[in-house]
Amino acid sequence: MEINGLSNVSMMQLTTPKTPTVAETTKSFGDYLSNALDNVNEAQVTSDKLTQQFAAGQVQDVHQVTIAGQKATILLQLTTQVRNKVIESYQEIMRMPL
Image 1: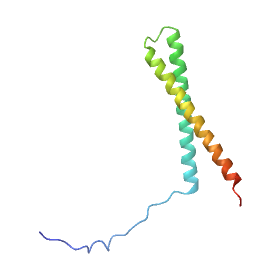
Image 2: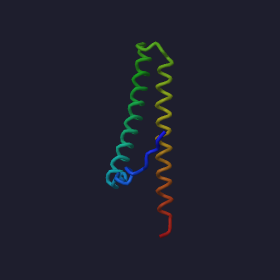
Image 3: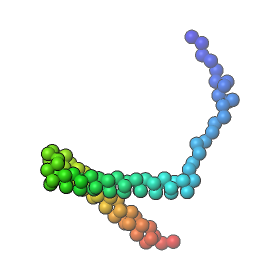
Image 4: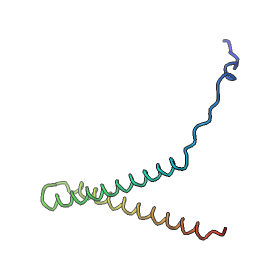
């Protein structure tokens, strides 16, 4: 068994990964929040549609309606809690002495 030296390592150029700029980070965070709110809205609309269809007798599976309703409720509660934490964090930062 022959062991080769590490002579090729010195020839390799080590590159550092590109760090995103503040604008790129802000945009992606904004996109993330927008997508999350769109998902919450979509879940609410789906739950409302299924509830209306169930009341009209078009949907026979009550489990599907219940699951959609619970999913929409949980997503809305999560969104509310995230909003509360963001506001709380902002208020804490504003109380910091300079």
